[in-house]
Length: 116
Ligand SMILES: [Zn+2]
Image (cartoon, rainbow, N blue to C red; front, top):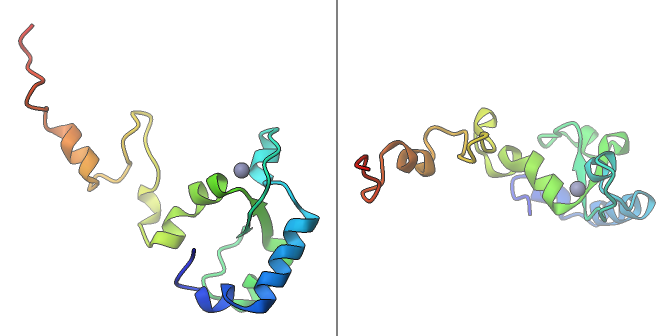
């Protein structure tokens, strides 16, 4: 769960309005667009509110999402990672050049010898 804006998410008002939104909009919007019907469990803010209460409570900026779609889009916002380095490249490695997976990928593994 989000921690930075927990004071907003922890309110009875959020719990109530979130539940109302998910009742009225039960399916994950990105999944629906991909012609999948997945139950939405999270109310996503399509405009990052960054603690701005006007944006936070603006229901026109709410969108139901499943956990998978939400986490895909929300990584940097919730984890504090840099926006430009989220996700993975086509090679399946993280885009962040500082990620330890990339460091390992750059140096050949000991058992990978160039000998045929
Ligand atoms: Zn989804």
